Length: 302
Length: 305
View 1 (tube, rainbow over the protein chains, first blue to last red):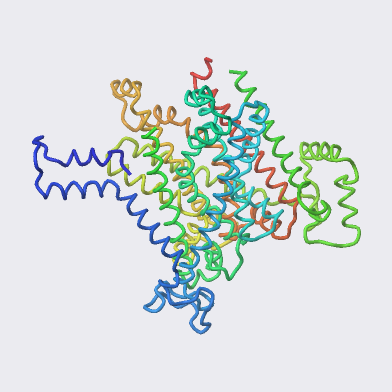
View 2 (cartoon, rainbow over the protein chains, first blue to last red; view 1 turned 90 degrees about the vertical axis):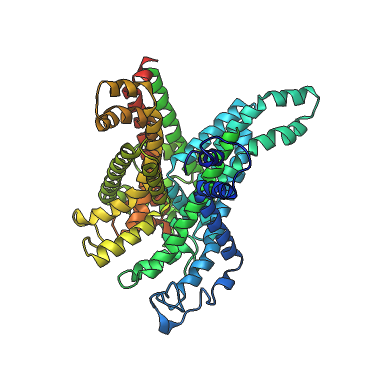
């Protein structure tokens, strides 16, 4: 979160008299702690994402309950020893639904990001080529797509294509195309005029070889970092559409769907409305923190 | 200066024209007959024929396109066949609650962001760390979850505010707060970054040496200078408020454009959705154009060029 690098922090904490020589073991431990403290946000976010990966892979190891099967006689039980997150109106375990819900929310979010990245990269590379006409057309296309506010653009897409997980992913994915397209276009133009590309041509390499060996790797370098920050935003957008009832339908244990269902029981039960939202918010924060940290390192490198 | 303003205006017109064209193309590239798409879930004898006449579907695509452009330009968004009345009337009756919500939330977000950024920019490490944490938290919290939490605390437990509806100012408080906080978080991040850079400028030292207090300095001089990045975000934020209004209205059971749009999406009422989305795009484009032009007028450096 702060600007000092770990090495600076270690220097600050090391012996102020400036003596060199073998450091005491206590100093080494203090230095390690200082570095860890510097990266606390990154480490916490990383730990959360690891936990999330485990939840995605093996939710059944973390809960004994089924996310869809409820005990109608045990509806709306407050959190207790057997149901740590309580049960919902139909007696389904909220913890189990939250854990299994990660699969839906994250896979739709990743799918949408993949659509944004895929089309953004294709259009961006096309826009970065020599043709002025193509470049103008693609830039204006990006302007038009980003002139529609994200949620409303998604509403239009869902009206045309219908409700469902895939369509929500498409809707959110289309809105994100300009985000990646603009970066890739700028990078392509930079790389196309760079000396190393000219030199590769002088050495007689074919257009295809220059493209795949020199242009593409440089153009795509920044994409994973931007995508990491963007996945958080996408998961947020996707769950918003699910909340509106446009994505997966009940009884799917998706976080947005669960929160929409909780709206009806808020007067008497807080737990169905709190836990899925907390899981969603923590996921978004974790991706943002990791992405921002990567971005800072990436920019310093450049 | 005038050349800059004119070129900005023409770009915006191009984008607005592009968004209408985009909508027209989307309508025509979809699988299925246009009559069926526009009719939504309805089917009664004579409906398809009525749609074909109103949209001029028997004419050439070029004529249809020209007709579509002219109609949108004159503010005619067609007929909602599901609700059986003109789209303009459907939306007109629902505009006010949404405008109130978006304006209240926008103002609240602006005030919160300016206060937070002015109070914490360039201050002690712990103050900035706390501000950064809060901004991250609010910027990452979904509007609808915030709304649910606010409802639980202030409507169900404390009973300070009504649970739903749009009667009186009390009903506006929670929805505006829910919609404003995520926006305020984002805006404060940008503003604080920019203010910290501005505080390093030589003119700040000059003003301090003349003995101006810290708060007047920040609010009167630094803020104005630091606003540019936030202003360029402005158009995007207005778009976000419009989209967020749809979600907020659903959480709080408020009437408004969002509720109408959502019902239209679920009943496949394409003319209504098309009108709302195009209007939102126009508002978004107009707002960002206005802000850009305003900035040219405010910033003496841009005026001189």
